[in-house]
Length: 395
Image (cartoon, rainbow, N blue to C red; front, side, top):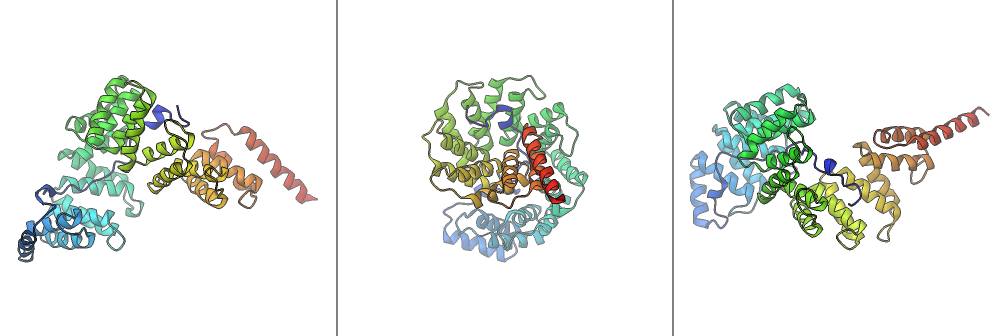
């Protein structure tokens, strides 16, 4: 088993659940090879005030169906339909304001349009608004308000809301930890083939959380999620194949699944590929490839990858030692609570390597790392050095 891969740790419930814009009208009706005459007809209808045509143009520009993809044009057409009271357009406009590029992204505007659609009863807008309130600090809303909208979305049948509530109960986040409620909520969405819920349900069976542990049942749900294209399900199925849990151990298949999940944006799968290439397990050692996957994972906010890459750079793996970059990555990961980064950075401050010697910072970082590691010897050493410095100052 490669370093750092522990099944229960690796198969954590995804948190927070990622909101996805699901407007009431389907983009499947839009042909990616839309003829210019069709586009002109749609444009004519939209300019004449058809909210349906305006919404379809918003979808077309948002997804690049038959036109060049443009968040700005999508927002313009959604806004026309939204101003006419179309809840689906209001929801999608809010999503663009929440997730769009610079120049479009505006969280206050996102909340405003989500709220309009949510009040009108749009379940996905209710979910998106609740998710925004729960996980966006700048919104400055009490968790109760976010939960109110998530629960309203669930009452309206929004599967994403059931999935999120299940994970909140599982983690005891914003709600009391309740394994039975977590399993119940997740099962509702998983039975209706919501891929995120299927992946989370697999975790319950893998860990025996709210249900008797059953690795074979876990694999079944991970596979369903993976087959639906869910990168989290693909990652978790890969973990099962790597460990031989519920399936025969198959490193080749595990690596293929990690790669598919990594290419689909799973930061944890990207980190796993980085480790596999760094340590030469199931793939030839390739430090450049390891660094490439670690950097992709870091872009997705993965702190473990930052710690791993920093260690590579500090040790000069791949031929190039980059101490300043290693310190920068360790510092970022340590601020996010990654214990190995805290430990390594504490060593740097204690010895004055790559940074100015600072025993107080070293002590603080070792103390934080002590929550996960036995650092008693290091704490004694840095405390002794601080005492020696204090004695020297008296003389």
